[in-house]
Each structure stands twice: as structure tokens, then as C-alpha cells.
Image (tube, rainbow, N blue to C red; front, side, top):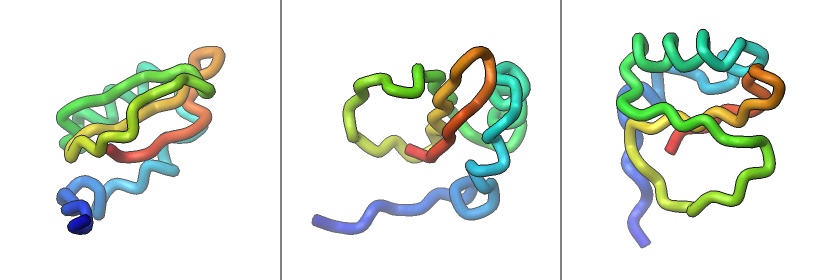
Length: 71
């Protein structure tokens, strides 16, 4: 299987910087920094494993980002 391509925002925007932010603020920042899709999830949500370039995933508990990753 070929390696996944890395988009510009994946290299320039560290997802760890979103952890601890209120979900609304994290989503605003993500769109402002060029992410095309922002997905909010419950921390233990069951999701598919497809990688979507330009998407940022936010695991949110009690209105705060507890985990964040691209794809």
C-alpha cells in the first residue's frame, strides 16, 4: 500500500495545539488555518479508518477538545 500524502496544513499546524481548547474555538481556528473539514466526535466514538486529506478530527468531552488528529 502506498504511503498517505501529507497536506500543507498537516505539516504546519500541530493538532496537539487544539487539545484543551473549547470546541467552538478549536473549530474556528482549524478553519482559519486551512482545514477544509472539521469533525467533532465523542472521545470513544466508533469511526471508520479512512484518511481524508484536509480533515481535522476533534474528540470533545464537556465542550472541550481532549484529543485531536488529522485525517
